[in-house]
Length: 326
Ligand code: GLV
Ligand code: GLV
Image 1 (cartoon, rainbow, N blue to C red):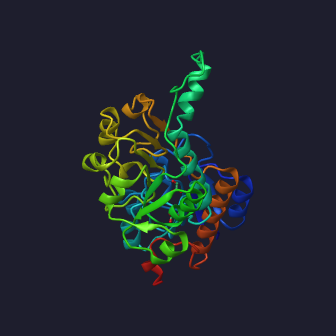
Image 2: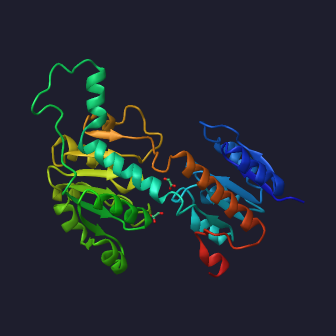
Image 3: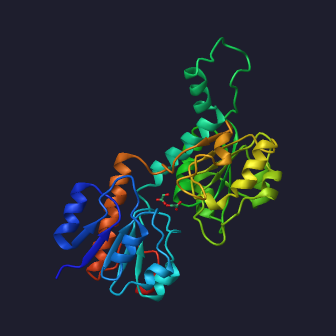
């Protein structure tokens, strides 16, 4: 008998076909509505494998209902939507999709940095709204990127990819990370910094850490006070790492200059969210890894992880390694 798999969103047809050849598939076959929780709860007791997205909360309550589940394959590098400890306790493998999205996410991060510094969405709207009456010396002026100082909080794969882009702009690069990375320092010519010093000295501060208990609310009121009043904060990691209320206050009181955010505490972000009222905020709907090629690669990695785990093999990208004694 083929293992039973539930897929929580429409995926590329060729990958669905591949899964159908080895698994008994049911799918929430929609593009732009997430699977209702109730359906997920209905499916979970019987399935052997779950293919899910970061929009699904795979918590202990849900996992408790699983009787045969061997693997949760998340089509994302981040897995804060999954209670990994609860999965581990039940012997359920959790997998993610690192590597394939690194360059694409670094591209978006740098694009957001530039768009925020040079006020590109605001300028474009200004023109379309018919407000462009004349060229004017200080009209829509922003901050320079070339020769500035970039502070990266979280030096993983994506952080390193961001460094390579920043080098083209002759940026001076500081980083903060749980562990110092001496190899990266040497190879990329970057400088390790305590968090306070990084916040004080950087023109751009990019959040690139995973979302964990440790990084939750990591950037809040007291941290904005340390930043330059010309500083720009960029977050393409996860919403809860930066305190949104404190970010809003830092922006309206001119403690910092602007922010570019691709991620929010609550997603989709409510239309009346206070950050969206500020022209200084460039906001995007969590599209860091959203290139056609990369999303197909991520789905492919997630499919492979799922099949490997169901065959009893060790998946390429396993999050709770202790489960297979790696
Ligand atoms: C997207 O945010 C991801 O974690 O892959
Ligand atoms: C994610 O892939 C990271 O390591 O930054």
